[in-house]
Length: 312
Image 1 (tube, helix red, strand yellow):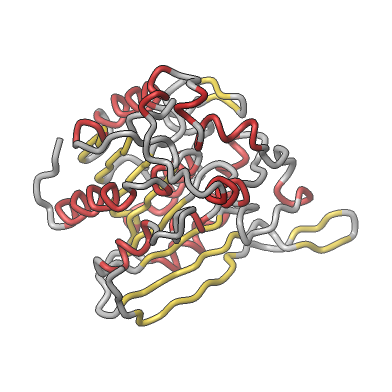
Image 2: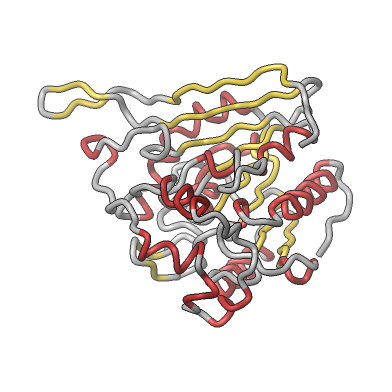
């Protein structure tokens, strides 16, 4: 990995007012943010928002110990902020504050969808999955170790992220959100809260399409489950979507793309096989060609921030 120099790095909790429960005082809805600021930083940062039961560490290293996406953006000069959403990663899940959570996931549930995709063939495109770093077996164990519980309702996750949005944008300043999976709806909610602070969104296989029914709720507000707490149009900025070849989310993403084309100030859908990037599943930031995907996103970002035409 080509070295780079940092002007600052660190992390802190984003907090909200204390809560009271059965005569006890508890921390409010909280989240953890880690940051890396390179020397001579650009004036727009990157904020990574993880999905489902995951955590921000997914953007730091791959399961087979290669540099994660965060390093590519730092090397390009962007200050990088990596969010552990409320109740995830280094942010503890307290049901007295955050409400109920799902059970922590097991191998039988996640391996066929994220790791052993081609072997299980749960959807037609699964046979094309070829990018998971399969050896040694510890790579799968490290992925599973990173996965935890999540809210039992999509709307609850949205309200959690909206609660910490003001503190997050105070820290990041002008930023581009890079979201993944169930972090996608959280990204639209953040965009509605952040307004002009959000200079763009890169949604990597975002969960949801208009009207879609999900086990944790229905998408009744476009690409989110509930009305936004923020007052801004979350789609009134440049948006890119990234979809892999072997994921179960293809049809969902193409439906969401149709929605975004009508609403975003500019929009591009990077269907990876159309760009010569093949074999990716849902956890593409962990897969063997993750650097190639980071390069595609960086190219779009550079063109977008310089107001140059983007690839369609």
